[in-house]
Length: 68
Image (cartoon, rainbow, N blue to C red; front, side):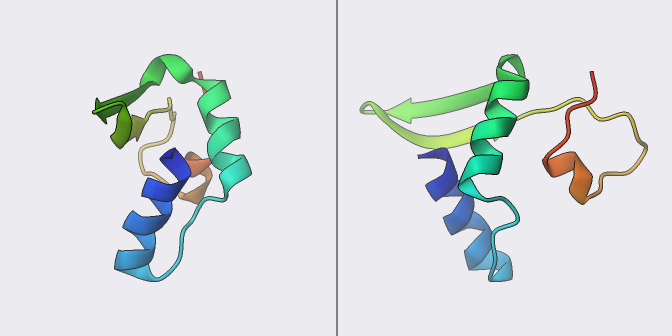
């Protein structure tokens, strides 16, 4: 569900999704304590996947790396 929401959101704006399904799964295993889902009627409708990042500016690496 997370990947489908991610894909729909990014494709509607930029035409492509920066993350693949396996990357989303991997990221959720790195720092699940920083992720949050919103459910309505038992269905995931929104989410936040957080990470720790040690640089002043975000980059594409921030989408797949977790720097505790």
